[in-house]
Image 1 (cartoon, rainbow, N blue to C red):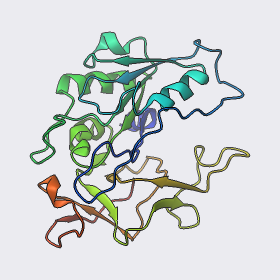
Image 2 (image 1 turned 120 degrees about the vertical axis):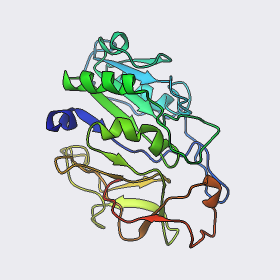
Image 3 (image 1 turned 45 degrees about the vertical axis):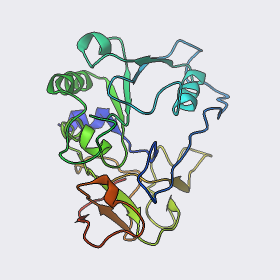
Image 4 (image 1 turned 60 degrees about the vertical axis):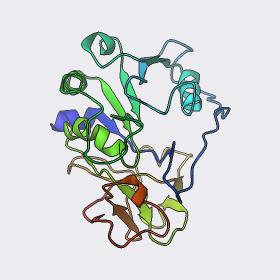
Length: 249
């Protein structure tokens, strides 16, 4: 398990592709471009990245994640989208498998929770990671957390199927000053240190002891666990259950 956890990159981005009443929505800038002055590889010569579009993913490589794809290609990676379910044949030439907001059902957000990935797909990804592949798993608030929890659980991560919200309604800024953003290779590259990041909605997750956590939910957060997504609206009802034992975002 320790070997799998080291090779499996699990990051939860706060991209809200839709939202219940009272919760603000975010629109991606598909024209955003970040120049790469010193690419890691010559154009088109880098490792192959497969971008998942086979699991009811609202985020696509030509849509909300267009800038993401352009950035990787600018760094020399080969990036392709795939509408195929996970299989050995799909993964055998890939170095990184990216899945963003995989969902069991885009229309039904309520309980019971159901996995977007079959047991066969989870087994294939787990074996592939053990053999050196890298999984980049991106998820969001309910029902996305439940849709990938079985997959994440294979690597010792428990994704909470809820909504992480600041109780004071202030902007969701994670910073080193507030001790909610950690110092690591991602946030502290030489000459390009990141002192804060801003998110927009999402959930939380519990990680194994050997995981590297980038950001933490502070004491000003609560994670709400509604049975029906329509319960998440302002003002939040006191009757919605809460999750208290979370450390990651």
